[in-house]
Amino acid sequence: MAMAMPIPSRKLFIDGEWREPVLKKRIPIVNPSTEEIIGDIPSATAEDVELAVNAARKAFSRNKGKDWPKAPGAVRAKYLRAIAAKITERKSDLAKLEAIDCGKPLDEAAWDMDDVAGCFEFYADLAEGLDAKQKAPVSLPLESFNSYILKEPIGVVGLITPWNYPLLMATWKVAPSLAAGCTAILKPSELASVTCLELADICREVGLPPGVLNILTGLGPEAGAPLASHPGVDKIAFTGSFVTGSKVMTAAAQLVKPVSLELGGKSPIIVFEDVDLDKAAEWTLFGCFWTNGQICSATSRLLVHESIAKEFIEKLVKWSKNIKISDPLEEGCRLGAIVSQGQYEKVLKFISTAKSEGATILHGGSRPEHLKKGFFIEPTIITDVTTSMEIWREEVFGPVLCVKTFSSEDEAIELANDSHYGLGAAVISNDMERCDRISQAFEAGIVWINCSQPCFTQAPWGGVKRSGFGRELGEWGLDNYLSVKQVTVYNSSEPWGWYRSPSQ
Ligand code: NAD
Image 1 (cartoon, rainbow, N blue to C red):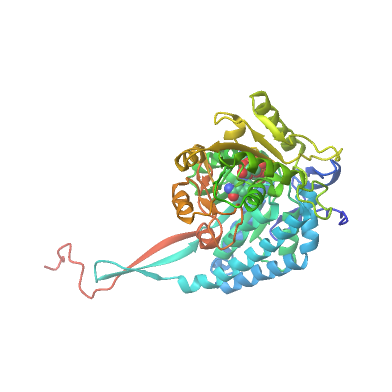
Image 2: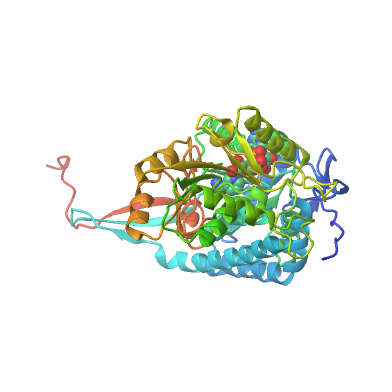
């Protein structure tokens, strides 16, 4: 078993320095696997937001922008690469801190750290390429004019992130926004901020210019809300729940501030009768139980063809019994602890409500017997679900898979799309024409064929319907932080000729 490690005690990171929160408040950190308090994080309020926004504004305009937004992309890339290198150097410690802080298995946390470093590297490449893309010409119908495009950083951006991939979700916003030339204030989730504060330490170590990235830990209403409504913030990029996303959008709307929203989901996975049952079972379980089921894109609504349903569900139960649930630092752990007591109770309440409404808890549904402490929930498989049940319609954000059967492709698509959400969707079948048809029919921003959840920094990520709008990752992630300026030139030697010359 990997050893637990002490949690570094940190302050807020503002203007390149560690600072005590103005009101000196701190929030305890609870290890979800042991329920013990293992440290605390600073709790920012509106007063600290003010300082951080001022620092970011100053960094955006310092030396007329030449120090950051107007610096060559290669200069910004150098810092992003230095951060990536430090993440890689500290990977093992960061992964342990992440696993302890949010309860995810250590192997997954280590995977996240590779993705974090890869994401900084990826956006370093795009920052380097940005200068060459400036002044891209626009084709016009009049020869006497020519136009070109300047892509400019939006300004000071507020980045608000959740707890399920604490450092990775932050990186999906920090890396492209800095690559674009923005300066930023990151507000991670109060439930898991430890690795984001380590990112602050790394920024200090690599000498990132002061104010370019400021990191404020704290509660949503106390630190997130003043950030979202601050007039000195030019854009808000938010990842979190639908309810909070809607509040953030309302706050931003007061100043017509652009927002991008990555929200929740209730994603379907359709399994057809022509599949290899073992392969399909593994992807189905991975799609829902990976990261303890706390994945925005979890394919938590299984639609399985009625002709294979009995055998397939039996297989899912058998495989689920084999999943190792343990302290996340234990070797081979595949299901760790739910992030907090509040979230743990919420997931159990979803399960008990489903039961009281007539659903069958076929497997799991409670704390594993061998774990007396910690917010652990067994992988849970629920059948006899109706489409009106809360468990079928709402995001549980825990290791809970609901199952329904279907008899035709049309019925499967109708059931899959019958949701307010539209983040991910998966189909498993050996008939690639059918997969292609279904991928076009899915109302979702991300479609997986013969798999579920793999996510690549190069490909766009985001949802439709109540799963939000805007795309992260890939070049789309960079565009999130750039505004497009049109420059039009009149190049004729002739006068325009609309008015008579006064001399005539
Ligand atoms: P949450 O909405 O409770 O909190 C998200 C962030 O918003 C936190 O930092 C929180 O402190 C802050 N916040 C809370 N109230 C606020 C307010 N009034 N103003 C501004 N900020 C405020 O979400 P969570 O519980 O941290 O994360 C889980 C949710 O995130 C799930 O719904 C999940 O689906 C979603 N998520 C989506 C994606 C995606 O890519 N679409 C990725 C990960 C998580």
